[in-house]
Amino acid sequence: MNRRAVLGVLRVMARERDSFLASEVGTRLRGKAAPADLRRILLSTLEDLGLGGRTRDDDLLISRLPPGRPFLPSPKRLRSDTQFLLHPALPEGLQELVEEYVARKTGKAWSDPIVLDRIRAAIRVQKDEYWGQAGGRAISYRAGYRVLAYLAYQMPVSFTGFRHILHGMAKDGLLSDRMRVLDIGSGPGTFPLAIASAWGRLSPGTVRISALEKETENLEAYHSLVPAFAAGEHLVRIAEPLQDDLRSVEPEDLPADLDLLTFGNVLNELRDLAPDEKAALVERLSGSLAPDGTLVVMEPADLENSVALRRLTGALARRGLNLYAPCTSLWSTACVPDRCWTFREEPRIAPTRLMARLAATEGGYRYLNTDVKFSYAILRKDGRTRETYRVPLGEKAIRLSGLPGRLKRRVNVVVAKMSGDLGAGHGDQVFKVCDGTPQKPVFAVVPRHHAGRARALLEGEYGEIFALENVTVRYNPARDAFNLFVDRSAGIAGPGSPGTKRTPVARRSPAPGKGRRQRDLPE
Image 1 (cartoon, helix red, strand yellow):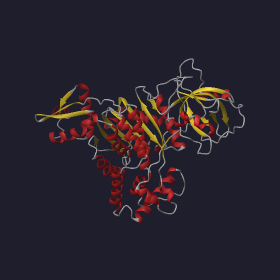
Image 2 (spheres, helix red, strand yellow):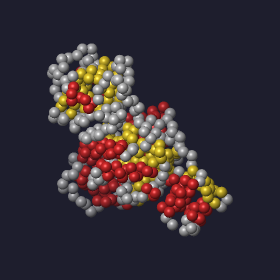
Image 3 (cartoon, rainbow, N blue to C red):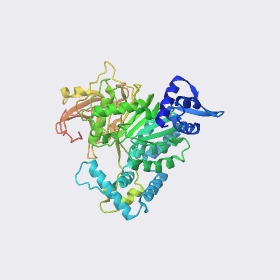
Image 4 (cartoon, rainbow, N blue to C red):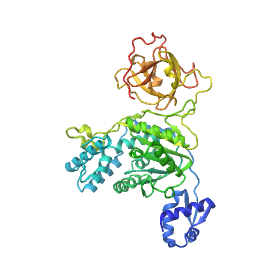
């Protein structure tokens, strides 16, 4: 008897009846397993389908568990989690587990010079492969050291990035007090580790974490790290991960009615798939989500992967999944992203002991990775979005798609802030903005000497909506992009409140176009 057969029978019986006995499951399976074996399989499988079991005489009564209830964390919980994210560091217990795993895997101390040199070599190979550079030399210990290199170099920032996403979901009420999660392409368990770390800070309830991973080396690390790290969190339960390929896994082998389905830095690896093919795969796997469940995709922040993610979300929208965040279609139109490069940037993470030791060599900067930058998308099936504001009929604002006809003129627009400061500290502060309509990238530019009066925009959160009033439209031919200059006569207001929440930048307007040079901006 295999797990798939048991899952299949359980799914059918759970649709037919509110409760039933384990012996009835055995009858449907036609005696393919001894009662003791069947009970063992059932107890490890029930929660995957949102079912529970309790002893009744010599049998097991199986019934559907009540659904979790959404909650909002208390202000105290949110403050505690915010403090962690303002000064992030990989938890001490997790650092120790990684160091122990390196020592166990290599048979030497984690700080042994030979071990460190081999991890450095594996990091260099991975970086060469990632950036498509020639000369990445295959090494004989590659399989095992690839995982060690990931744990040393990439895992800390991915862990922290997903912690930020979880924090936002908690603030929005997207978590429930009885969550079931599946992490697709889990690797050594970065996202499950992040959930285990965050859960006690944010939630009053329980979470059960399942994972799907293809590679044996990754699963070995997962088994060493995730259950041990979660052991101290009594509200966190770790299921046995499934070993399978996300391309070919059968949906009936996956947990059902999930509250959260995650893809962490894995879809970018499917480079042979076109956006529509990738979207078809994600849609197929999203069949495991509950009707009010949430799907999260996180990818690296570089241009290629960030743009690919926006194209993927557009393809998923055409298949019926709505984008909850970070983007908002403010004019209720379909967004067709072409070269939309937008990512979130958060405070740097402190280097781990392992990372610091790797960097203690000539050219050590190559082994430091502390910048927390990531692209992400949160999707749902129920039409719910983080920002509910839409530009109403009659609003005195234009769509960003209309900027080409208004060069050097002043306009009112309603936009979402979609980046941190891209000005690189060289004077003007620059932010990517969007309303879901532009054909070309659009940036809001705040001159340095007006920054003090544009604090609402400068300090606004990623994805927050603003009305920019009386801003000057410029075109940057070098980047084929539009700039909106927030100068002396411009104003910043909350959406839907023109004239009431306006933050004037200054009282006087300069001559249009005078003395202003186009900045060199990202695509």
